[in-house]
Length: 366
Image (cartoon, rainbow, N blue to C red):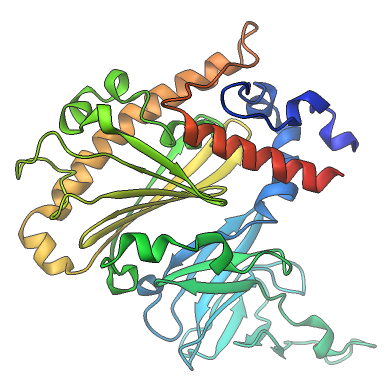
């Protein structure tokens, strides 16, 4: 093993069925060196959700993301094509933005170097006496992009699996819902004092719902809470015990889908509504959770109070999750905890996620 993986023992990477598996070691949540390993083995190797097409609807619109410490710029060019680049000027590393007054040129905010939307270097101010300099050698580094159901994904790995192989089967399962028919409405962001995997683990099981979310538990038919797993994603869903109009989680036809796409993407899908969650590590003990809300008819949803209700109820559930995740992070740092075991009935999604993580680490190291 490399020195970066000195925290990993061979037995930690054993792939066991859930009935016999341990949870991953606490050190994987509490050390900065492990996050550095994950950046290379996980985040640089897998597809990341950038945004929805409706968040950059016009030529020249752009949005910024960070993947494994790399700033990324996603932009819609004047031909309506979606492009992504490392948001790094090739001069001295400054950030880029669409040049004011044009939809065809990117400009560095530091020294004003300009690039065309294909990433080629166009303008180099006050460089006339520089020798052995060829603009063709200093174009922007592109980032691989693919779009599915209006959602734009990016990958830092040119050899990553085709996106269709990762999300295959979801479109058919959620039909007649169409995510590309949704329109962006709102973003909320939470900075949470826990490792990114603590938040993911928590999302992936309903085991904690009766304890942490008693109000939500009263709305769901908890006995029939189901988790399904595919190769690269998992799905959670539950019938509603409360089918009244006051139930903020009630879908029009009773169908709600909660997808997790490895390693850090969450899609909460209901008829006419979509909430995406992107989990970004900020440090080994902090993460940023980006919530984006989309609606098929935002004006109608606004008038009916659906959006306000969604935001208020989501904020309540999120605060409950934040409190327990931060407490779990403290427990993982303690002297008395290393590994636990899985509930076969309730923690299939967590086991599935941690198994995929182990597979990424095995592929990266050996």
